[in-house]
Image (cartoon, rainbow, N blue to C red; front, side, top):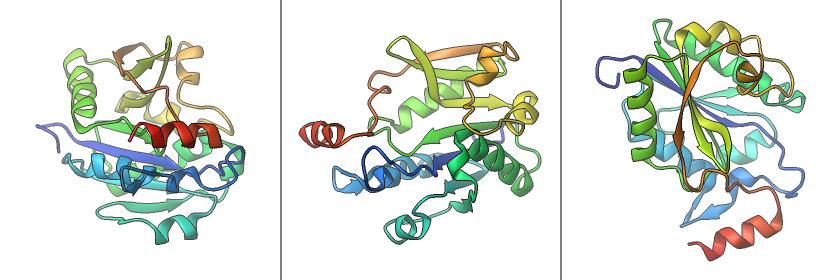
Length: 200
């Protein structure tokens, strides 16, 4: 519980990193895998449940992580896209904690996410009482993002390659945004890995 609000977190890490050729979840930055960084940030906050969504290379990835207080969920349909991971993750979070009021979604490959940025995202969501608050970077909105319980059923209906932004495109929800400098840097290619190493 953060304050008096019950919040769960889902870290999405099921993708295959095809363009990179090996699991980007395990790319090291400042001495730890990128996925471990996202999990460690989440561990610094008092979430009511923590879900880690794995899929491709799940066994290999698990061996390299300190799982901590996370529950591992395996998305057997990871090849169908992010929508299946979000849907399964939200369902699992609600099964673990049925009275959640909000769910935060993080990715495995955003090296510049911080505890402070997540706290600000949560604070803005709670104060503004919107269905969702998305991060904003490079003129786009995306994750990390936090969703209120009124959106949970829509999130669980996402399919295949639909991300949570589909709810915006369908105009199903109103939302706030929070600027996240560096949020658009992710790791998809060998060039991205090399650039990341230079930022250490």
